[in-house]
Amino acid sequence: MQHDPHSSDRARPPRVLVAESNDAVRCAWETHLVARCGPMTFLDACCGDDAVRLLVEGQPDLVVVSLRLPEGDMANPQGGFQVILDAADLGVPAVLVSGELDAALCRRLDHLGVLCVRRGQADDDVAFAVEEALQRYVLSPSSALHASPSRSARSAIAS
Image (tube, rainbow, N blue to C red; front, top):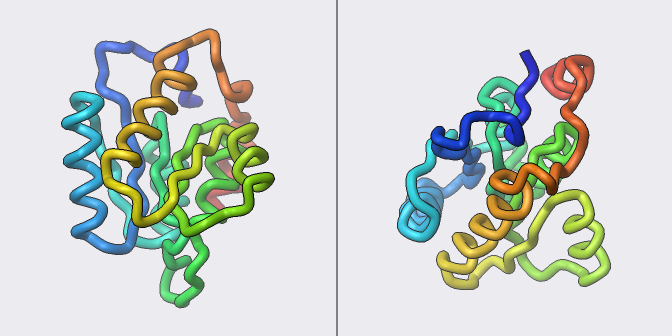
């Protein structure tokens, strides 16, 4: 069965995939998210491979990802791009935490449902972006990001 966060029971707390290699940073983000946005179910990933697997298997409502996320065993410091691209393909909104990005790239990412937060800003800025993404894409059924992804799209990303 396909996941469609726009038709799900809103009594359920949103599922948020948090993809960050540093455990302390991931924990701080999660603490701030709960304090600002209320109860959530977290799916934790410390590398891009785990994040992509959880994106497909865990069917999150939202993804928070560090651009510097390593791909997996390899030390590719930009594995976060693969995660946000796969999230966009599946119609799952994302918050990207990164160093400075070009303004045109940030606008294009926003069009894909990816909000950008500059690394080094307060953890509360990450929570604010998550709150905005939840309001924009998850809690407001009229603002569906994409049509529900096909089973073949999930299969292609999973492989």
